[in-house]
Image (cartoon, rainbow, N blue to C red):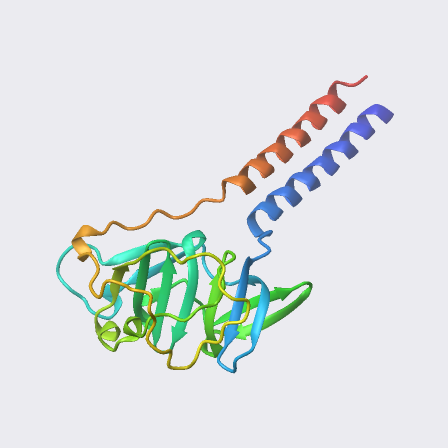
Length: 226
């Protein structure tokens, strides 16, 4: 009877561990390392949470047109910087820049959370000037990317990827001056572009799988033990 009791206790313990592992896999995101510049000029760093894993530029929401789909997915893993010059938004992702009004973007909530080593700060998106992600330093964007034409007709521009780390302290003015970095004023047509593939978190999936296999091995071991 004692052996049966021990096995039931171990089974309950393993079940709790499985639930904990699955919960950690689904909700254990600690945020994406980011540098945030507020509209007051304050620079904050930490783990940023709130942005969806895949952002989206949906032109149909402001300019319905007949033709192919005009919604484009932007994997967060490719995003270098999000510049907010309300109502304009500029998202730099790899060799493409997505420009349009805030209303045309999905996946950017009205408030974000920044974990600064245990202290979580809530940030209103309306009070953010720029968000630099994945080791990218804050930098100004070309003035032409903030043109009024993008408020009625969003665009996808072809550009060179953002270069390596910039100076540690970079101030972005409310109305940034023209930059020497070149960009094509007109990108490819909507028909030539295909929606980007969402980024997948393969590393976290493998860790969860290995933990589950380890727990399963413990279950088999204890049930077969005399």
